[in-house]
Length: 240
Image (cartoon, rainbow, N blue to C red; front, top):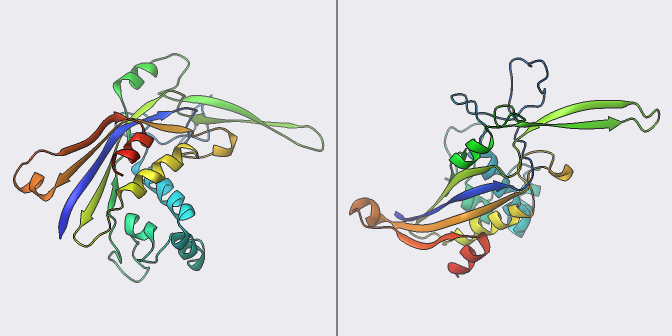
């Protein structure tokens, strides 16, 4: 039976350029063959919830012994042991022979879209629809021949509004702190591609953590604001 939802909201701030790959049917002259994902309506870059959730799950699996062992037992696929932390937080996908979830997720991660300040930042002649082209060279070690290429990425200082919802049911462990731990791990890791080359450093800012009990939905009660407009470390300390 449903008990409560934790709502985590705030900003994802790009500390370095961010590349989350998309696809293009055609390559424009002077454009990039390594494009980022964009909103099909506005054409603006965004951060898919699936990318953020996948990275949080990956870091949880690395940071939890039972989850890591489940990944090994599952030949590198996501942890599927219902007793491990990763499965409890992020669920277990259906088997190839099933059309239903084996273990439902407790965590919903929304797509993150640019805020108004960022849209103004992108209104710059040096950017192409909210993105920059990062040029790189691959040098042959034998003959020193250069193979130039470019990659499209969201520029530094861009900000996106994010929302994560964590549901708690009767009999569940209250694992909201584990979601916050994964967010803190991500700040010292990277989001998207080419992280080892400096891409994808992000920071969570202006975080609000609120609790909405069953009565919030049934009786229209107010939510309980636990902390507001703070950084991830202080949010974690606020629930201890």
